[in-house]
Length: 232
Image (cartoon, rainbow, N blue to C red):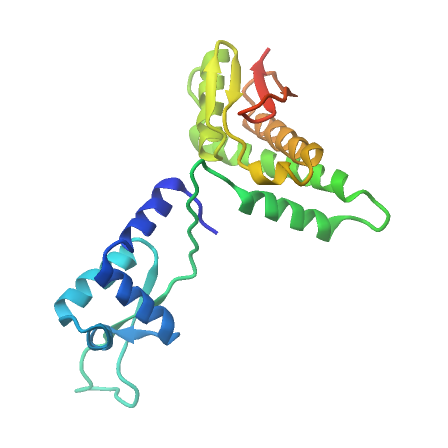
């Protein structure tokens, strides 16, 4: 599942045009690759207009394209392969404020599949969250590690990664306050578990980026995430 804010917003915006949405709905309903001519005939627009909108949907990742000749036609004289469109396997989600239930869901699903018989599913979920955070941190550090070190730069760098995860961080001196919980709705189900997942995920991130000693602690407060990160 894709959940990058910019890409998701652009994908949703692409469907705001009625003609474009009609073409998308037709492609989805056919459940097979279709040509521009088929799309134009089905929606009552010109082939040129259909091609324009179909390619816009392609650019936004909502469709994918392939080329093929009509069935039964091959070899010299068969003509050029026609461009065909079908649904892509990319999924987009948009939420305001930013939520990452896909991330929470994948952590919990992995924890269920890995939990040994008789062990605590909650403890396994916390371990998985820390591992996932560490992986995110190391991947980020490999491409975005700041050239200059120091508490301020380390926190700013960490803030960029946490922003991409939906935490809406704000820096105050040596501390990052997280003004959004990406797992907000799940808190009502099990606050202790969800807050623990946040703490372990972010502890793993901090370990993964390797930007000096940082304290990741629980500091519950209304209107923001329960976790605060401080550079010691």
